Image (cartoon, rainbow, N blue to C red):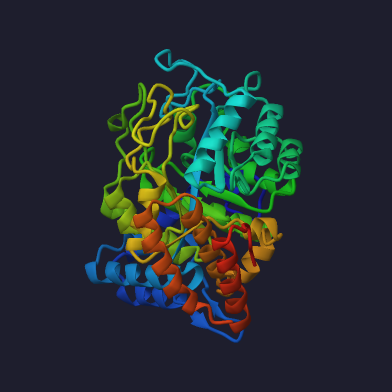
Length: 482
């Protein structure tokens, strides 16, 4: 039986409820009156507190996704753009993945780290190698990392992850420092989540891969990840362990995308109902080629247009969540979806263990990659590309360090007020990047962008402080934040 507040995976992600939802969506995909009502419900409304959005239920959002009326799809895109602007403006948060180890005891059939793969060399970073990787990332200009590791209790125990986090935060190189470490590791215990919280992590990220239980068990035939319930209930344990911000995601292409879409939104509804806080981020990766992995063997792949529509519908349904797209996607795909809801992207990414230190921008090792990187541009190239498109690349980590996490972040985000902090913070962190890392042509574009965007800071006092801080950054000071 479906129960959004249940703590049992098969009740808050209920198979029969998803099937009924998909049937309802199919029956109503040409119901213009209903679709109009859903779009009106989702539209931003100005209130005495700010701008607010009602969001949508998984059933309502599934109707939008199923709808194939071209003019209605265009209205969805327009609404997604409006919501994205209302809550996140034109800021795009930058991050990079850092792969610590590819030792893994699972047998996930879509991942080259599965323990039966003999083609891929196994590697685990020492703390000195972690240090060198972090310095290389700092020298690019990164301030926010997402650490990744295979699941192996012998080679990658929680103590190793905690030691790596401590090492990462300890490194100050020139003007560089990593100010936020997000963690993408296997489902674990409440006790271990408390340890991660105490280590000062930002967001805990865990992709569900697929919400279809039968498919999930076939795709994970052996290893601890085979346990569907333990994996699906991980976010509840993480929040019980004190982690405020969690990030959801599915690997599109493994199962039917409409099923995954409904399950993903049901998970978001569950977190909101039980913990009062929905997902801080939602990621939308697609299956990609890798060592001994051929994405063509999965028969649920989605084209770029469907992918864009999924992103737009997620933005409309869960207006407050950050949305992440990685370098799995190429430049043209990323450009298409930026305005439809994406608020975070990676840049200059390497998906190999030890993929940064000792390599130039044009070099990259492939022997330990988790997936082929489609967008292989340098961070500086991505930053300039974003600015040329009218976006503000943001290296801000202020909310995490000022305690604006969990319900404190969402209370501001849900009324569109978080921009009062995020907009000037984005400009100040961009100024840091321009001073310390940017090529001359990138710096010229960035300074013109900052000069324009500072005029959009509406609070006179905030604007005055921001202008003062921007000048101080030019004179060598660092790390200002609201």
